[in-house]
Amino acid sequence: MAIKTEEMVLNMGPQHPSTHGVLRLELILEGELIVDVKPHVGYLHRCFEKHCEAMTYPQVVPYTDRMDYLSSMYNNFGYAVAVERLLGIEVPERVEYIRVIMGELQRIASHLVAIGTYGLDIGAFTPFLYCFRDRERILSLFEMTCGARLLYNYIWVGGLSHDLHPDFVRLTRDFLNDFKPTIKELNNLLSYNKIFIERTANVGVLPLDTAINYGMTGPNLRASGLAFDLRREDPYSIYDRFDFNIPVGEGTHGTVGDCWDRYYVRVLEMYESIRIIEQALDKLPEGDVTSAIPKRIKPPKGTIYTRVENPRGELGYFIISDGSLNPFRVKVRGPSFISLELMGELCKGHLVSDVVAVLGSIDIVLGEVDR
Amino acid sequence: MKKAEAIFEILKNKFPDADIQIDSETPTEPIISIPPKRVYDISLFLRDEEGLLFDSLMCLSGVDDANGEKIKQEDDSEIIKGGTLSVYYHLYSVSLKHKVTIKTSADRENPEVDSVEPVWKTADWHEREAYDMFGIIFLNHPNLQRILMPYDWDAGYPLRKDYKNPEFYKGMKVPY
Image (cartoon, rainbow over all chains, first blue to last red; front, side, top):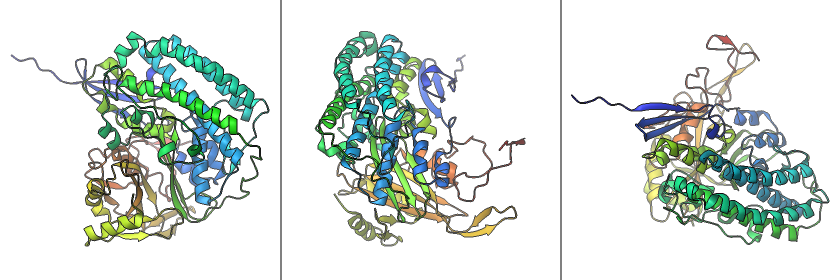
């Protein structure tokens, strides 16, 4: 008599340390093998888009902070770029430079969290502490500038809320000089660690055509081998003035597009962000950062879709203006939302313990998935 | 690299029987409107045609146009009868580096639009979100259910302009 077997359903989350927020994954298993993964999201849904319709344009800025709370600066940045394009206004040079510096500092801070917690998920505790030590210094720089450490409300439509602190440039240079050698340290601790490589190489391989069809962007797409970076592809602000490389996955320890590649692209991107910040600090012009802030923001009738390269990928704002003081519709295309969609595809055929490795490597923030 | 006007001409020639319009009046980006039941054909054409190759769907957004007749209720709230709900598709070609905005509008009472999930897999969750928030039905979608709201939410579609907060949820009074 044949033994009857059936698939087992296992819930991971909503409260699970490696889901990076409140996320439930429904794992469908055949023994240890994963047949499918169904993510269930919405636990942090806060009606961001509905709120926007009741707010004036400047009032939306603090709400954007709360979407992807690990890259709040960049969310502000993207929204400001979108509304400025809708209004058709230019912002002063100094504002643009400060925005780029803040954006890239935020990118480093965000990648440090991604790398640190990824190590933590896999079982390496020490690198996490190193990453958070360095991130702390970036948060101190932000705190010095605008008074907040996580939710900044700093980049406004047409300008910035505060000018830089007089010591900012010196302290940022100090930080960058101290930080460069620590990336090397981090590589020796984690990136080239045999156990870490065994856990991540050849796991969750994402082929390039699948990645494009699934709308993957940012480091996750670049790890699959395509040098696609919106700072180059679709330039906004003043990114066309800086000299930087676009790191792509090369399959050093396995296949192109595996978890290790997705991880390592983020490490390499931190070097590029440092280069951009250094160039921006060298050229930082004098000027007033609040002069171009409009007293009353009332864009003409029309629609705009603007996208910026958030640390996690393409952050798009689709805004419809009906010519009044409130946006008629704001839609946010968050990179984490799209990346999470691919979980099932990436995990198929792997073992249960690899789910954590894959989930950590696509680096999601649930605040943005659910908005 | 093609402009929206050129893409419009190509679509017009390829699909002479479909009602395709272009709105170039918008200050920022021209929008091509297509009928809701032809979305799948046209999307497939846009993706695969040599010279267009829109291989990436950047964003898919549902919109409540709120262009119907507004009827005042007794408690001063409004409900909207008639008019349309729209879906906007922002497409990008990774290889040819051009983009285009497509729009389709469906009746508010019976908002049925072709799903583009078979064309761009990323549309799966985007369409579920549009269904969740606006109640737009995507035909041939493999798994059309709510995504951000609870699966058993029965108080309507929150992003519609005439949505009213429910007083009770599953028999419990909502305290606000």
